[in-house]
Length: 260
Image 1 (cartoon, helix red, strand yellow):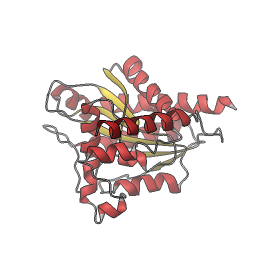
Image 2 (image 1 turned 90 degrees about the vertical axis):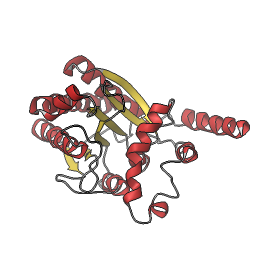
Image 3 (image 1 turned 90 degrees about the horizontal axis):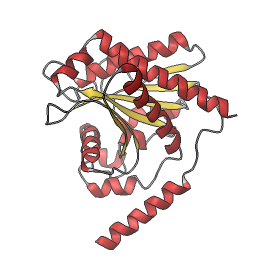
Image 4 (image 1 turned 60 degrees about the horizontal axis):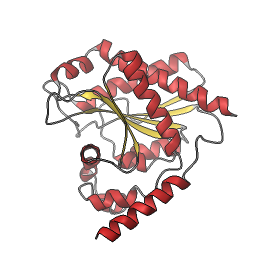
C-alpha cells in the first residue's frame, strides 16, 4: 500500500512539473464566468441567519456588476442569476461552452469551530492537509443530488480519498494561471478589504476539475462564525468582498494581456 501511495505521488509530481503553462497563449481575458455556489434545493452551508446559496448569489451579482460597469470590453456570464439548482457539471459546461478565459466560483465557508474565520481561495490540486480535503468533500457532496451521478462524474465518489488522488493526477494545464489569480484575490482581501486571509490552497473540487480554463473557488468567509456571518449579510460587507475580487480580476487581466 505504501508503494502504491509513493507511485501515485511520483506521478503527480511529474504531471505537476510538466504542466508549466503560465498564461493562455491568446493573451486575452475578455470572457469571465461567475458561478454562485449552490442554489435551489441545495442551500449550502447554513449559519444562524444566512444561507450560503443566498450570500454566494449576492456576491456573484455584485462582482459581475463591478466588471460590467468598469470593464465594458469584458463579457460577463453568470451560471445563475436567481435561486436555482445547477449540477456541478452543468456549471463547468457553461464556462467551457462559452470559451471563458477565467472561471470564478464563489462560496461561503463553515466549520465546527465557530471561532474559525477568514477567507481562502482554492485552485484545483492535491490537498496537503485534512482540512482542505474536508472542504472539497463538503462542496463535492452536492453531486449526490444528481441523477446517474456515477456515470456523469466518471465514477467519482466524493467520500472516497482514492477518488481525489486519481482525479487530481489530471492536473489542469492552467494551474499556474489559476494560482496567480488566486494569490491576487487573497492579497486584495488581506491588504485592501481588511479581512483575515487564510491563504491560497489546493484541493480536488469537481467544478474546477471539469473546467478547461484558469479557475478558482473562493470561500468568502465563515457563516459558522457569527461576526463574519453578520459581515457577509450586510451590503457593505458584500461590496467589499466583491470589489476585492474585481480588483484582483483587473490586475490579472492586465498582467496576462501585457505579456504579449
